[in-house]
Image (cartoon, chains in turn red, orange):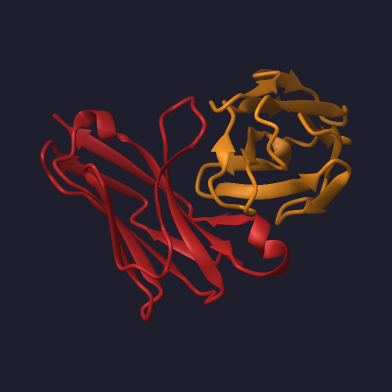
Length: 115
Length: 113
């Protein structure tokens, strides 16, 4: 049973565009929401993360928007570049018991930024 | 890759043979994880460890076992490999604080014929 639903599966934008990737969760006991970036042939790498006590977090060109009441969070990439072309995963961490040690991942979004 | 190595990086094996994948870390992190990555499924947790000799199952643990006899090493064993276990396997580590900030290794591509 998937607990984190990610959309879209793939996304193509032009250089300078603002791709938006969305995630929705069902478990209200999640307390940490990271985004990972993965290039072909590499392991995922932490990009940016947010906790539910804030509605937005920005690091460079990457912004997470968080809507606690709707149980949704999204990644925005400002002024996207071809080098941002990668697969992006959202994830969520539980806050109790054994789930406190684990991340649940979305299925990923393949982003292509055309020059 | 945050002081994480995986070996082998590529392996081709036949159905029914045992396979062991190794994850080695130099960060002295308490938590270690094994994931598999398949198209359309994202990353799915197989097993994880929260200390030496302390392990637990993830969401896709059937057909896999793990062992952790030292802080730095976490082994994943496929007792009798099947074609459905063809995948890319990632190890991850995390410092204190549970599942926050997991750092991933470079991956092992396993093909079971």
